[in-house]
Length: 544
Ligand code: PEP
Ligand code: MG
Image 1 (cartoon, rainbow, N blue to C red):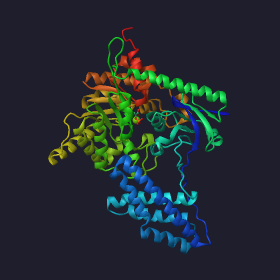
Image 2 (image 1 turned 45 degrees about the vertical axis):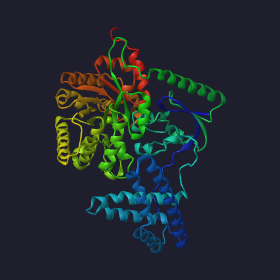
Image 3 (image 1 turned 60 degrees about the horizontal axis):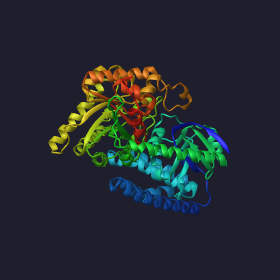
Image 4 (image 1 turned 180 degrees about the horizontal axis):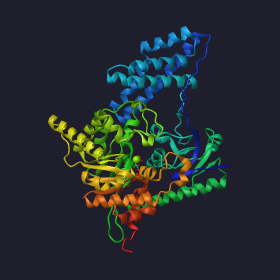
């Protein structure tokens, strides 16, 4: 048995076999070949496999996200058969006597460049598609087949690190636990693991990558951060008991369903849930949350290979609002950038992306993207109790611009005769020290604040949330962060606004009493923590 230590980011125990996450390496070498016909036959076989894979993905997408979203995979299948595309690849093999991988990569670059230079936005967007299908063909040429296990067995995914876009694309029904060599506990991958309710250990180090093999038996303790490779009998038995105890604790918490979030001395607080996808709604309903305090809408963009259209966004938001049946749903506008990257945004590489063009800065500099999202949000508002909030605010001017965009969209909808609710609450995230410090000026502009403690901590303590090497310097209970939250709470209340916390700190039950004493009105946590926080609230007595 080998024991590897990392940091547990979601407390639960999992036991099963390891699957090493394979990131397709699409860096391609130019290799001289003699037999051109054999190379073309290899290409044809890889194309056939690619079309087969896309058919499977199309069917899955059709069932899970509807026809409009699935259509892109149909387009990909058609692109693989496109005459010009194939002629180019074959002619490069013929004239240069090179390997198929290289011919596909060169063709992809040429076609992507050609599409990007067109005036039409639709054709420009095809650049990402041609790269996508080409990467698929190259990966099938290199691996000789599909990379993903067809088995129904759930596995423990081991990876160097997982980008949020890679995490959302994993088949959640096949994942028992995550273990990554790198990454930090405040990263979006860790947050996703919590949202998905699965044990996760991050920062297990290079040692992990050297030690693990596909199919190896392992046990993951998300409480302690320990990963046991080929666990001995005693360890396996102890962990099985821990797993059973854990289930029992969770079962006991179920008894709190339907009960109020009220302290012993009668103070009430709202407990809402955080989601990243429409698929999380089932977990929210099961958690008995009073609403959704944070819908990270950027995951709609990360799951897609192109900008989601107004219709696609409208149908997702409407579904969430309808499913919540009149309970509050707060949707955060696009928070892309930094660690959440989607290729088709074509964001330039930055030295310090967390301090760069991200979130509201992208929306305000690319108003067409923002307008599409706001139109979808307001149209969906007719189907429930919507709140809209803006991320990464640092100034009054930004809030005023956001409000102006909202007014424009509402005017457009009114003149078209499209219905929308006139009681949509508008809020901003308090994620920067600047926003907390000028919260007296920001509060009169909005209905509510929502404190994003993940970013607020990173910017206040100057500790990159992605950097595992500095975790020892990240004091999540640092007084500077708590004072900023208190300042924002006081200023919100002085101006008739309410304040919630939607960062991961909201679920830290060691701080529940502190937040109640600060006058926080709402805590929004991963669905899996709703009852745990309710339990902490009900055990608190503020009269003492
Ligand atoms: C936060 O920063 O606390 C937050 C909720 O936003 P995200 O984690 O998505 O950056
Ligand atoms: Mg944030």
